[in-house]
Structures are given as C-alpha cells and as structure tokens.
Amino acid sequence: MAIWFTWFAGVAIFVFCWQQISKSTTWFFVWDAPRIANDIIGRSMPPDWFYITKLWRPLWDTINIATLGTALALLMAVPVAFLAARNTTPSATFIRPIALLIIVSSRSINSLIWALLLVAIIGPGVFAGLIAIALRSIGFCAKLLYEAIEEIDHDQVEAITATGASRWQVMAYGIVPQIMPAFAGITVFRWDINIRESTVLGLVGAGGIGLQMQASLNVLAWPRVALILSVILVAVIISEWVSAKVRGAII
Image (cartoon, rainbow, N blue to C red; front, side):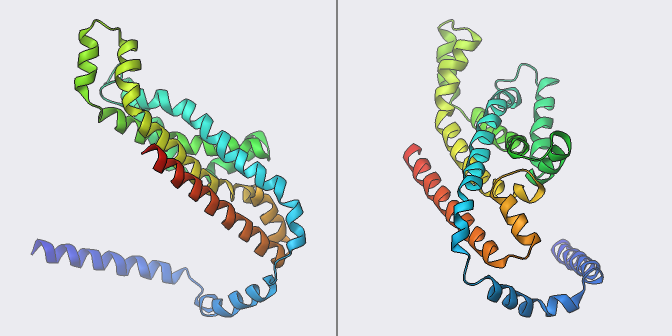
C-alpha cells in the first residue's frame, strides 16, 4: 500500500505541475517552433567565416576568465575545505557550520546570477566574469575537497602524530600528500566546467565570446551566430579532451 500510495502521489504531483506549466505556455509558438527553427538554420548557413578574425581576442578572454577564475576559487576553496572537514576543522560547533554555509551559498547561485550582480556592482567586463566564475567554483571545489580530506587513511596521520609532530606538520606530511591526486583532479574538472560556463557570461555583459554572441543576436546576424556557436563547440571539445588527458595522467 505504501508503494502504491507513493506512485499515486508522484503521478498526482506530475499532473499538477504539468497543468501549471501548460497554463503559462503559449502553445501556438510551441507548434510553430519547427518552422521557426528551420528558418533560422537557413538564415545561418553558411557561417560568416570572415568574422572569425574578430573572435580570437574574445575567445582568449573566455579562456582567461575560466583559468584565472578557477585559480582564484582554489585559493579560497582550500582553506574552506579544511575548515569544513570533520577531521581538520578547529571547531565542529562554530567554524564548520560557517564553512559549510559558504559552500552551500556558492553552489546554490548560478554563475550567470553572480555575473549579473557583479556587472551591476563593478561594471561590465572580463573582471566581473572572472569573479563570477570564482565565486561559483568555491563551493564545488571545497565540497569535493573536504570529502576527500575526510576519506584519508588515518593510520598515516596517527603515525606522524606519534612522532611528536605539530598540527601543521601532520597536515603537511600526513594529509596533504594523500589529497593531492584528488585536488589535481578537482582542479582540472572544474576548469573544464568553467570553460563552458564562461562562454555564456558575455550575454550579461561579463566579457568573453558571449559578448560577441549577444551583439550578433541583437542585430539578427545569424551567419555570425552560427560561426560563434561553432567556435564555442570546438573550444569546449578541446577543453574536454585536455581535461580527460590530464585526469587520466593523474589518476
């Protein structure tokens, strides 16, 4: 009975949510979407290959946003991770909840939202995108890292502690060497994700190749849009390949 009731409740919730979505959807545009999509694809072909000379600098900005944003995030995520891990936090009652709150706050806000806020605060440009990527990445990196810290081999830590080593020596020789492979993997994995996220930050004024995308969309320059999408796709594929090779070499 409990299983059947659970299925019934799930179906009822699904039907209710579908009704709410259906009420706020203009179905005429949905049925007309294939024709509009075909029209846009027709206008986009062939891509404007001559426009590619103006994309190298925005693409370089996008890579810099992802790379520097990841590095800045790691500088802040490492201490937060050590404060959040049960076996390294100075206080499980006061400091650990604060560290966990920082992790949750960072992960719960999308990078586009961070970029919108930062563009309003510090103005449009690459710097706003860099900070947005960093703030978004802190929670991701710190969460995976503090989980790796909690899963270390405690026998090694106890052996170093038994020699009379200080707290910092135990951390440097007993904990850090064990989490370095995880740290390297987290770094490369997050950089790969940030490459993808940074390509769209320009849509809200945070610099990068997304800014060129927004400018082309505003004037309905569909051949340029097709070219920009192709460049973004190639950049993401290359970053995925590099990330996979590095992670394979580390692991």
